[in-house]
Image (cartoon, rainbow, N blue to C red; front, side, top):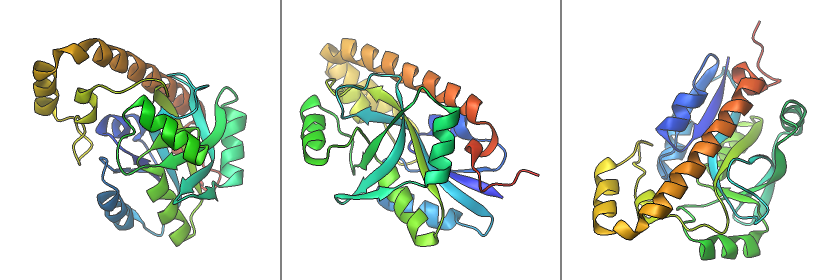
Length: 224
């Protein structure tokens, strides 16, 4: 038996991989993610989790904060996460924040874009996987939860190099990043800040994973 862990990046995949976990990488492409999820669904899958880093929409969230989703916004509609599994998360991870995550088809890169999404949706954070993952979970009757660590604040604009970095495989397009830095050297301070805050997010996510244990503490997953 296993849990499907939906991530955007290869680095996230390496972090969450383990026994009773099947990792599916989105790579910033919702069409590919849906296809990959459909191929990964098997009879022994007992739940789906969207896990990794996310951008803050709420100005109260800081880099390194972790948010447990009570609902995911999909096309303006709030879809609730599984209450039993989510409640277990809140018990094990009392320092996390409960909130709403909205999905996006592209990176919410600028502070202006984040403010606009926040005004329109009221969501606390944004990622590019949760809206797809919860849709698949609903279609297959599987419990769904989301746990995301904030990697960039609502008032921060991501530098160009960070916006072009992701490959569809979830890897880093180093050539595009280096070209961006060479042609736009003024972004280097923002890139250093982005890297520092991303490291905060990954450190926070790792602490959560250590506390949750195998299978992300899924109550529907028998490890006996």
